[in-house]
Image 1 (cartoon, rainbow over the protein chains, first blue to last red):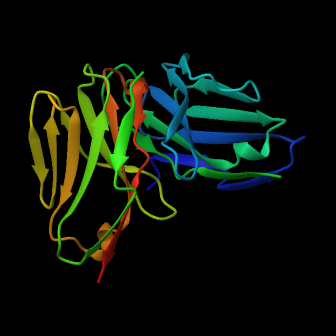
Image 2: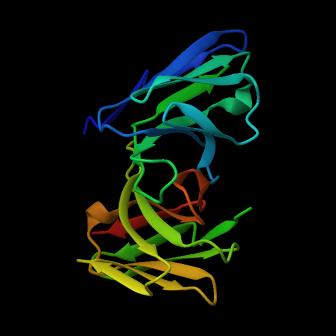
Image 3: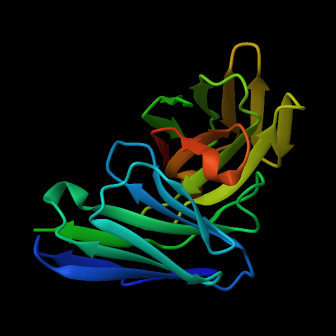
Length: 114
Length: 112
């Protein structure tokens, strides 16, 4: 399945590092999302972009910085992360973020912060 | 905001038996309820969804029921097969995909 891709699939970083997660969707969608998936917790919505405009920021710490240069690409820039930020980061897309539609998820980036 | 609770957190059934996963929600304005399946090491994928204007929806071995008065909805899987083993997430939304709140997930194991 190649509709939504994410790179890298695995990432280990120190607390002082700066890294970026990349998401690309090939579905012609206009909305893209970042989620955090931690063990035994609900999927946590972090950011939403609809038609390249950020429409949601669920009180995410500033050490996470999203970027959406166009409707097909979404980045999550990481800096000075904490060990508790270790999780699976999932990207998703949907046709239009204002409607109730199916979200298509990417395979995720498993992040480990040491 | 919306609060979605999901039970049980783990469920084991014999192959061929039925499995039921239940979710409750707090926001009476929620009107869209999707279910996602996440196999080990894979991405979540939508398997079925229901909107508040219907009480039940079925797709082959999978069905979802919605009780708006009680604010709960359930996923029913009949004639379970080993490939049904996965984590299942329910979610609720009052409008807009950016207002989608997920439950904590149920790990279903189907024993051959």
